[in-house]
Length: 302
Ligand SMILES: [Zn+2]
Image 1 (cartoon, rainbow, N blue to C red):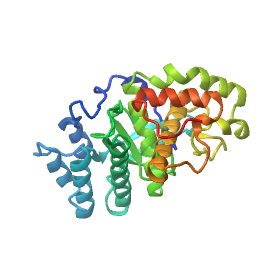
Image 2 (image 1 turned 45 degrees about the vertical axis):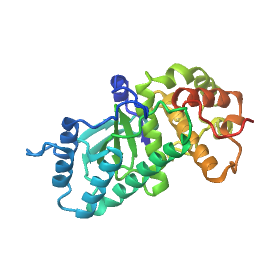
Image 3 (image 1 turned 180 degrees about the vertical axis):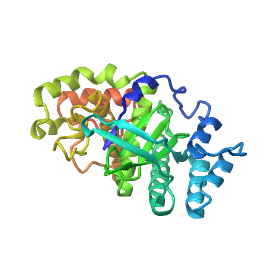
């Protein structure tokens, strides 16, 4: 499952939020070293040299990692071995797993997803004076594998997204794209001073107080369809998962991504717009659009 670690709390002070007019963010060489050469000494002094060496055993994966870096500044490497406290998931052992060989497909999906997200931003703001207050490039992508479990699928802190090649949500291009957009929101949420807790907590708490984990009660408020298998409720409202408002907000961002993509593609939505549901939805939607997306909303008024 998607997972926001408590670590995030300690990572509020990331680099400045990028907008297209600001300086282009980059992954620093020290961070790239930790991603691509954590165990071994290297003579490399640039990221492409590090990618070249780390992916030497799989030329196809190497080309993918290089292309991803050149196109988006994202650096795909590994996370450290870790015994994680996964909240409702229990303890989880994570080990480094570079996405090559049998795991190369994950690098294919991630590359496609990051390219697609890049194109989505370009299309959404084409010929606009509005700009998003959002960063989606130059991320540190840490690939790991969970041992004996299939969660979490991913988690985020700073400008890092950790990706679990055994993650239960990461079995298709669509699952990977939505999960990455969800995680990307966590990165940006904390770069905006934990915006979701400051802005959405009151409404979120009231919904949870009213509905608990009851699906029928929660459905009108659920921004996205992701469910937790173990409890049968929406991921956005799953208890014992850090401050749940972070997950609600990340799922809201995924809904924004999906509705804008559908408007760009089809000029209309096939199902009712999220903002046209209960008043809580309209408030959360407007707040999100104004804070992160420069007020840009292609969905017609209700
Ligand atoms: Zn999350």
